[in-house]
Image 1 (cartoon, rainbow, N blue to C red):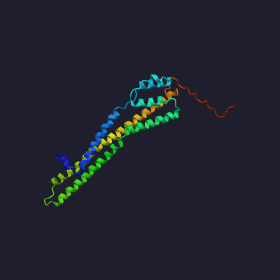
Image 2: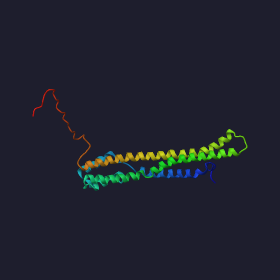
Image 3: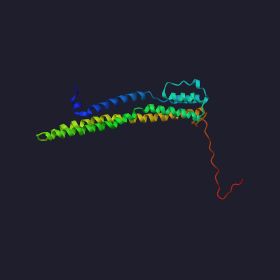
Image 4: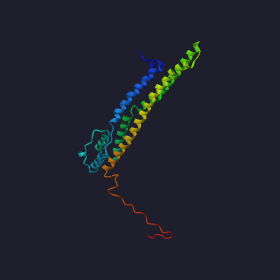
Length: 223
């Protein structure tokens, strides 16, 4: 036996129920995936860059994390030229982005579709309400209108309750993925520099830049 509030929503009740179940399943599935993402700590990054600069790759104990897969892929192709390594890493980053952003567009689509279904249910409910009013001989009272309106607006409220978490989860995970991949790409770039014997750390070897000699007006330099 279906509850009265579910029956009151009319023909759009089942589509809205399907949307809510899909949003819940996709949100939990994405949450499980993103909870497994983590970047290396500062200490791990420093140790990794030191090993890359010293070419002691056998000593690199990489954890089973997603960022470690990219670093392991870089070290496995370290004998290739830099453009080829960048091509390999670019393909891996693209696959990683697709893996992380899978189903996010579907969540956003459900977030847009649910309130439209709710609004459709409201319009259909109001049409039924006015059709019933037109066939009744009783006087139209505010209580009669309110009874029909709250049932008609119920679908809109349910559609909004589905849309808000769907859009929030979709946009939130998309932002999370972008931040994660940006930091991962920066880590791989630093490892690329370390393999070439370069570093972004200028604290150990500061570079002194000499200022140009002042030019005296009216004085021509001689060879």
